[in-house]
Image 1 (tube, one colour):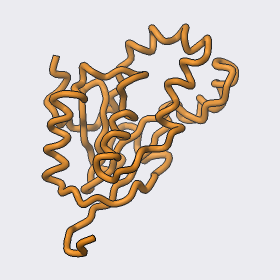
Image 2: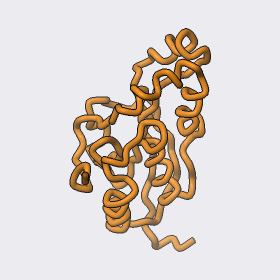
Image 3: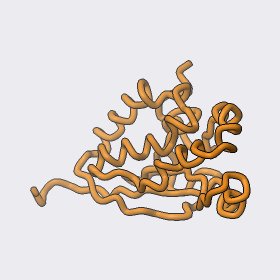
Image 4: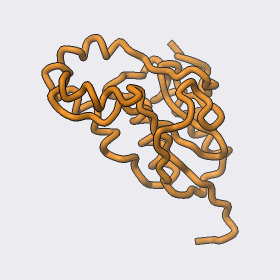
Amino acid sequence: MDKNIPRYNVQLYIYDLSRGMARSLSPIMLGKQLDGIWHTAIVAYGDEFFFGGEGISSCSLGGTMLGPPDTVVELGETEVTEEIFMDYLSSLGETTYRGDRYRLFEHNCNTFTNEVAQFLTGRTIPSYITDLPSEVLSTPFGQILRPILDSIHIAPPGGNVINGGRNI
């Protein structure tokens, strides 16, 4: 490894959108324990990056209405420069992660952060986050709620859209 190549720290910010209610209500509603309803963001180059119903967005650290994260996971370091990263995000925002492609269960903030984490560090995000949709949908109540939940597009206010919006 060349010591002259700059390295940048990469983190995963994890937010519980339920603010603790999932832990209390999931056993009653779903018949199984869920510790949270997770929203995640990648932190690199001094900013927070996430995907929602408006597309890929960025903000200052903890700069959405969600405030500071509930948990921070150190994903490692990357040699990818900020310029290459922003080009990568711009490309994703024009194709795979346009706002109109957001799907709460299949293509969400967590699939975005998982893909970006692998690009930057070669590591995935924790499986308890990526497995959450299948955990919910494996229950009868999850199946009943699916049509309603499929119509939800989460886009935490406070971010700056990188790819120019929903691109519909």
